Image (tube, rainbow, N blue to C red; front, side, top):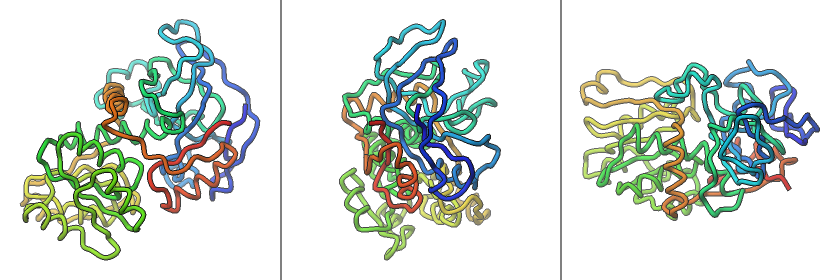
Length: 342
């Protein structure tokens, strides 16, 4: 089969299309013919080697996919050749950890394309228990935008952030993949949403997604804007996928007793914040990663009902994985980027 892989850490150009062995469906697993695979910022960091270099090379990245069942291994029931399916973007590798809560805190939990070869390929082998049938009528490219950002957004907004109708919610970097879903999800839960952007094109995108307040950080102070918008109180819930120096500003924009959910580090893996002001204001800082199978299914149901729509910016051929990484790494994507197998 063909796969986009890298043999050394480095710039996007290290990604090359090569012929590799096609996996076989082992006991309990299914073999998925990948129709489209998502490209996430995490994979840019992994290819650069900035998160970890404890990856056996050569390596195939990718956690997100839409595909069809090509084969089923011994003991697998409920799937047949040709079924269109979506694998979970992350899951425990040890069945003994399957009941962990939160799932992503399980000792053997791994995001696809890190410890095992991922979805930037024509085929991928996945444990059947972590595969769901596609409930949508979307194109494969649209579906491939969903897994990681959807299950992460559902957990951050609905489960950890506990957003409710009437809440004022700040979602940082509104045009980012996860944020485009978080905006729609918060709106579907009845919240009012503020978001930040840094370009005119992103302003138009987040407005289409339903954002009530759009703050252009090139010109305006989002803390002041959010406090004014929320009648002087601050956001009830802030979803921060930026980290770094922005985290303190997210805390500042959140009301007394409010919650900041942190789930990204685009602007830096280390942050400092004013401890006294934080606990004097009774604020809560909660971390989250990715959701479980039920959260994934719940999110897909919202998509199937039309309440949340995928935001596909560009589709690249698998052979052009390097160009896709360039776009995502340069913050040039308005939504999500995918690779398609033609």
